[in-house]
Image (cartoon, rainbow, N blue to C red; front, side, top):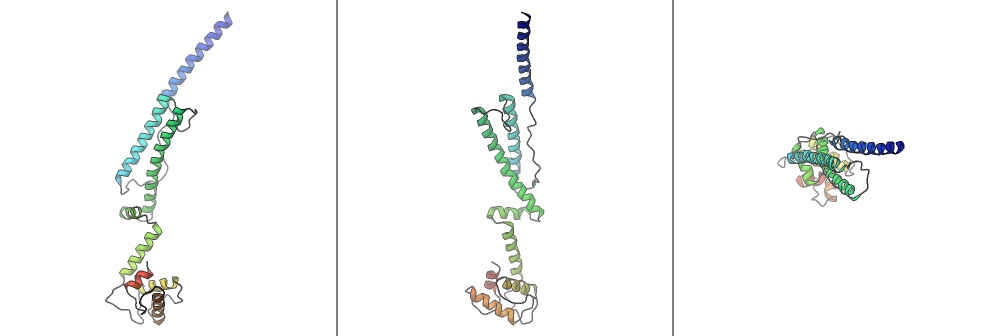
Length: 216
């Protein structure tokens, strides 16, 4: 009889302890706040995206907490494999994916700003789908072409940065000349050869069409 009483007391203690554990578990959830160690651009040109990023984090944290306190499901490391858990984990993954999408944009923007780009330039890259290398190439070409003055013709012996940049491009296109920034006969002939290869009027005179072909 004594053993039966002890056994019953143990069962009662177990259920009481189990209930206390679940009560503790419900109101003492693991750390749910989402954090990242990535460097993000809080001054991103699209501030609505920054706001949506923080909203997405709040929604994710609330969802994790709700699933834990109401359903006892830790969606980050689920212990069960039932349908309710699967559905909760699927929703969690979708919410997390949105955060990762925002982070990718903000992290990329921070990286580009570290390389000296402005919000306006970053916006241009994103809108046009241009990569940084192509953008820098186009910017450099624009600067070089801005040196050209259609009213001024090059003369023999002229030395300038524009001549030097043109010579470098001619060399890059397989023409064997010296890139010294001095406009001489060999440079004129190289320009003429380049024009012939690119279906331009081959007069060896540097004009805007030849420049566009060189720095496309």
